Amino acid sequence: MQLTTSQPKDWKDLQNRVAEILKECNFNVEIEKKAETAREKVELDVFAEEKIKGRKYSIACECKYWQANIPQNIIH
Image 1 (cartoon, rainbow, N blue to C red):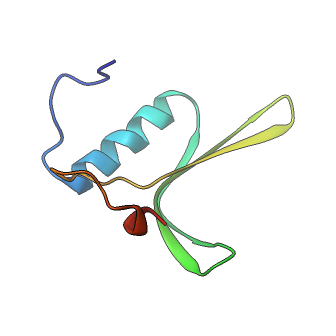
Image 2 (cartoon, rainbow, N blue to C red):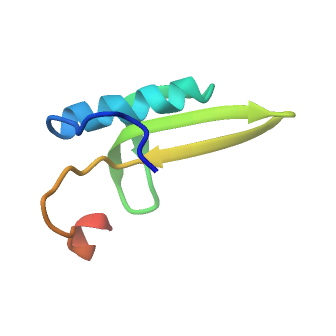
Image 3 (cartoon, helix red, strand yellow):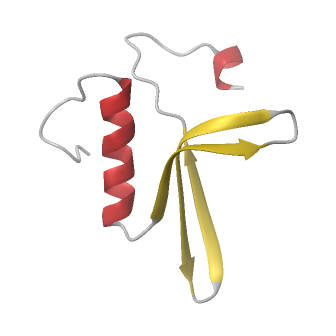
């Protein structure tokens, strides 16, 4: 399913488009949020949260705009 009528220009444009889509779905959105994982501190490209009936739902997005498949070691 296509959500927009054009392709992103670059990774930054992709990141902003993802954030806008999540905002339109009523999520509170942060771009380039710093977070701590079990392994290290990271920067999440897009982080979104919403509360439904008192329960918090979170989405973390890493926006990669590559022309090839992403190696698994990059994803981790």
